[in-house]
Amino acid sequence: MKVTIDKWIGVSTWHWNHAQDEVCGICRVAFDGTCPTCKYPGDDCPLIIGECKHAFHMHCLLKWLTTESSKGLCPMCRRRFKTATE
Amino acid sequence: MSRARRIAKELQAVQDDPQAGIDLEVINDADISHLKGYFDGPSGTPYEGGRYQVDIEIPQDYPFKPPKMKFDTKVYHPNISSQTGAICLDILKDKWSPVLTLKASLISLQSLLTTPEPTNPQDAEVAKHYLSDRKGFDNTAKYWAKVYAGADGGASGTAAASKPVDVFEQYGIDRESVKAIENMGFTQERIIEVMRRTGIKKIGPGAQEGAEDRLLEELLK
Image (cartoon, rainbow over all chains, first blue to last red; front, side):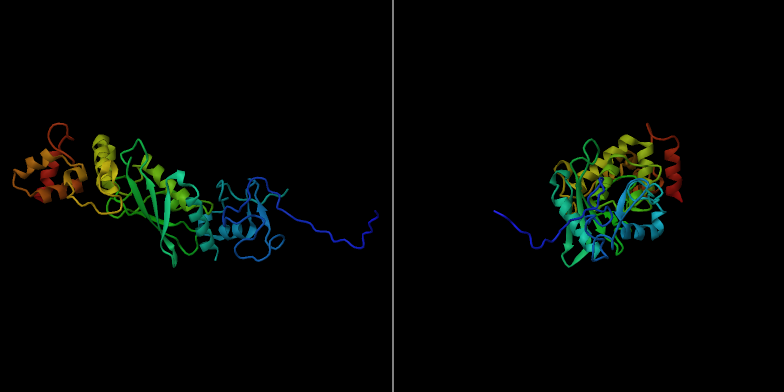
């Protein structure tokens, strides 16, 4: 039997590759989902990872850091939150 | 509504873990911001056997602000107001973090019962009792657990105690000392009021030196 492929469509899936956690500790929604204010996951609602290796939806973390009570600390380990460069 | 979704998830998580001995319930389905939490008094403490009810109010900007919690069940503890149930616990104030949950907060309250922090009290009178007479404090705390939290087959945790409360047990005040002063012509009510205010639990043998003089001085004011 001989098969001729007329046309094909590539489909791919994506997944945030962060080993430590599956959900954002702040909003409790999966990293692959969105923060509560966004509609589309992925590049529109990215993760942010600190030097301490803790990750959150970027929007969730920024909202926390704008509150006075955060004192600029990571919600997980209470170290000063600095975005990891690598 | 992120807040509502997170609260719903938290309620589910508590239901999925009955082993923890923690319960959370919404008072009114239309208002998810007012809940009641329940946990058991930790074993090896005067609160053992009691079931404690906590009133929980969730602020608009939760989880960026801590939930407001206070005890509905009366508790005799240095960091809990014996009058209002107000709680002094750092994570419910400046040490709050949005990754904490209602369940984690209730577990922290449970461990606060195990390890009081009398140097940073919410109830100064109770803290004084704890620091000056640990045994007397334990007895009073145990008595409160029985009367208010249903320990040892006492009243049920949420209902008010049906039998009259023994004021001596309730405040850890020595019965014989009060009787001795009553014989001098003061009313029991007044003596207990002054003893509570001054933190004097007993007079005579085994009491603090000068306790009787101080008490009489206060009574005569």
